[in-house]
Length: 124
Image 1: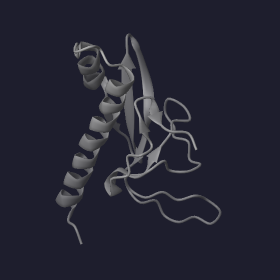
Image 2 (image 1 turned 30 degrees about the horizontal axis):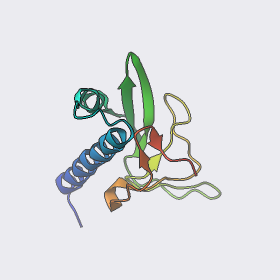
Image 3 (image 1 turned 120 degrees about the vertical axis):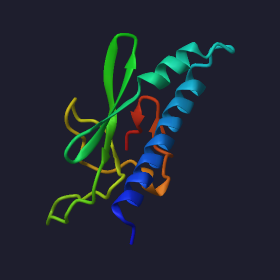
Image 4 (image 1 turned 120 degrees about the horizontal axis):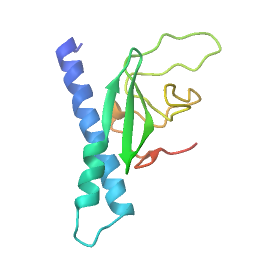
């Protein structure tokens, strides 16, 4: 069983890897013929904002800030008739402040980044 510090480190490492995947997808989509300024600016604009249940991931393009998606912070208790989520699950954004709770798009703690695009987790 991992202690709280080990769990925090796992989450921190997984968020770093998620950031890397988002930026790599952006760089593939917008190659700048050797000029990495746009990619660097995009990488620096990605932020992780910790809330009570989720970590909101935002990105900025130009002067517009958008929600990339949400990451579940802790396992959620099983509720009859409701979908439950595990710590590290990636969720699309339903709005600026709420995730789409229909289904996770992968789990950053399990190394599942196949759903990651620079625009957000892929649609189902």
